[in-house]
Length: 130
Image 1 (cartoon, helix red, strand yellow):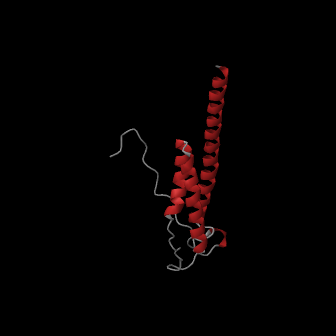
Image 2 (image 1 turned 90 degrees about the vertical axis):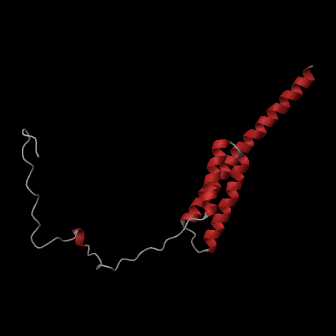
Image 3 (image 1 turned 180 degrees about the vertical axis):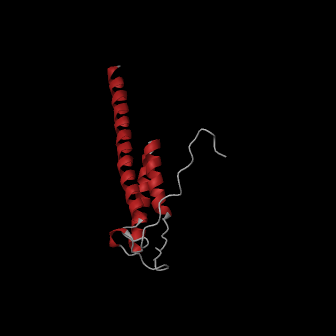
């Protein structure tokens, strides 16, 4: 039921065009049932591990985890290459995991080395000053 102060709804739409519907731009779709279904590819566990471990290494500042991500990334890339899928999702995730793991693992490793160097310098300077 419609409220009393509203106008009635519009009429039922546009009439169909004369001669049926034609695809735009001269495209002719294939006949029904002629579509090719793409083969399903699974994502490798190593590729996912490489990406997840590189993010964990970044967020926890645990640089060995980033280096483990590099290992799993190399393993995922090798697996994709052996399967003949060098441009697959597995290879891409492996590459991203390797890059993130190497960059963040290396940066955190350098940060730890700098921290240790500063602490050693401070202990030596305090020992020489007394």
